[in-house]
Image 1 (cartoon, rainbow, N blue to C red):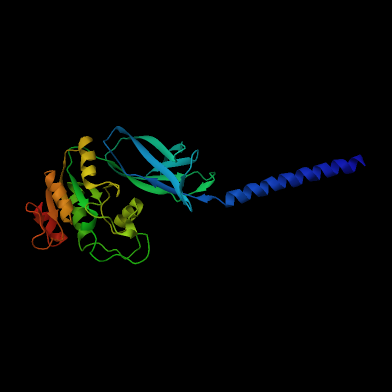
Image 2: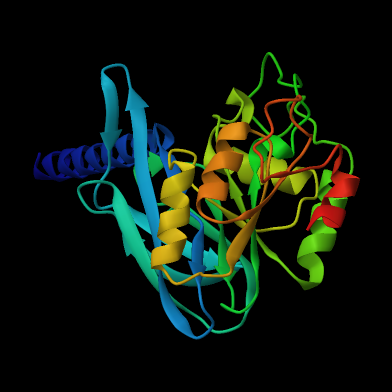
Length: 282
């Protein structure tokens, strides 16, 4: 009789352990989907920089955030650091950028976390202050009326203006660093998210650069760079009149491409019919 009791106890423990294992596996398979975002970062060689990441999500009743989730940072594919999100879903990584150049930031959620999210890429721009910066409005790169009716990725039907990528690459190869801005209008829905802006630019072979947040007004972007000591940002390539006027107020040299209709061009701005004419105006 005692032997049967011992055997029954062992079977109970095995069943209990099996139940825990199955429950744990089920939980791992039913991770909540989150949204991970990272902003581009600009710094000087041999200067420490802080890389910021945000983990959140969407729910029927609104948005929500996650705390205590492990995140991993890589620079150009090499693991660099780990951090955990705070109660607001925010995490930061400190990094020392030693060499001048443009690097790919990648942040991902730890595999053991209860949250699943696609990894998020951004750009780390390590620039020297003496090199000029050219500001480019996103609308000046996209063909008018090319917005896709469906889709939210870089594979949409949005097409760049002819020669825009080649000409901008020539400008940035030996002389300018480039900052991309939304400018005087919101970007098309297909690339409204900052990550989609980066993917669209890369897919059409535009040179890498700093992508300013779409939520930030052009004047605010200029003020941010000014306060950070980037005094070499004095040239802009735009499409809209409002952006041209904003830059002219900040004493920029401004080229509008394609040129605006007669009577809409700001007086001191230069007009270029197409991107092949832009370098002649600078």
